[in-house]
Every structure is written in C-alpha cells, then in structure tokens.
Length: 79
Image (cartoon, rainbow, N blue to C red; front, side, top):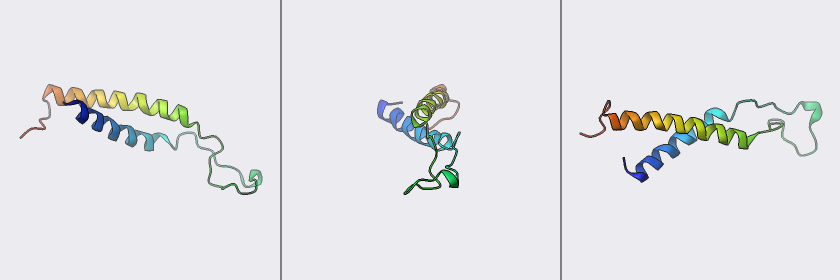
C-alpha cells in the first residue's frame, strides 16, 4: 500500500468513526435553561477534543485491521 493510499483510507475511516462517536454523551439544553439566542438542540457540553481522541484511536485500530487484511492477501484488491 502506498503512503497516499493509506492516508486516504485512514481519512475516510476517521470521518466515518467521527460521525459514529459524535452523538455519545450528548445532553440537550433544557427548555428552562435556554438563554437568549441559544438553540434548544445545541449540546450542553460537546467534549469535542475527547471525541477527536477516541475517534483517532478507534480509526487507528480499524485501519490496522484493514491494513493487515490488505497486506496478508486474504482479500485481493488486484485483478
């Protein structure tokens, strides 16, 4: 696998995992807690840096598995 191919695959896996991790632990603002100009669907605390860290680790593990499958030849991507 070439470097750019590996980076592209990791990037795609990272984004897919991010969209799976984003909803974890989200608590919406209660209607009584709303301030002026606040959206009721906005999360109270997003914890985005923690979610980025979890996404990076999980994507790394998944990429490692994909890399092992590709290198081992279990699934051939060449015709």
